[in-house]
Structure formats: C-alpha cells, structure tokens
Length: 122
View 1 (cartoon, rainbow, N blue to C red):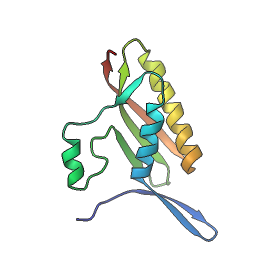
View 2: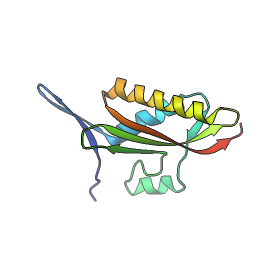
View 3: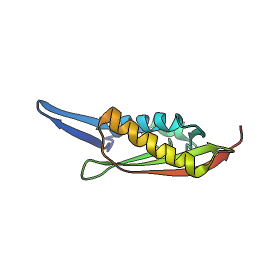
View 4: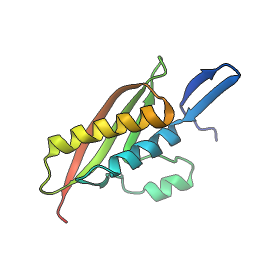
C-alpha cells in the first residue's frame, strides 16, 4: 500500500534535500507544545489504531499541505489552558511554528492556521 506523502524539496549544487511532511509535522508539534498556555495538540479518537495501518499523522492535531511553489501551509488543532488569552496564545503559536520551520528546515511558510478546539482546566 503506497502512501502519498508530500515533500518539500531544496535543490543544492550537488543534489537535493527532501523533507517529509512527517518531519514538518513533528517540528510543528514540538514548537506548538513549547508555547505557554498550550496543553496539547487535539488528537482524534482512534489515532493509535490508524497508525497501525500506516497513516502516521492522521488525527495527530496537525495538517501539513505543501503548495505548488514549495511553501507550506500548516493547520494546528490545539487545546489551551483555562485562564490564558486564546488570541494571544494562537498568535504565539503562529510565530513560534513559523520561526521553527524557517530556522530548522529553511521552509517558506504560506500560512499557519490555529484551531482552538478546547479549553482545559488544570
């Protein structure tokens, strides 16, 4: 069963580097989790079972789309801690994710959309 993964391709003098959407999703997840006020990425029920059949990032709280111009559109589904400003946390996620992807993978970012799916009391 072939997976249709998307890759960001960087051409270099002596070859090319291809960065998988799985790597991009991992960077996004880590960067978002470092923002104060983020409890976790909102995952869909059954994500463990779906991973067993080979779909790694299904329902893990991120959606990565590689666009025709080799830029990336990111969508994050997050739960935020009660008492934090939803708008401020979302803006910080956008800034942190953009910075992490540009710094770690030299990826051009088209957009970072943040979906706040829940508020968690801690």
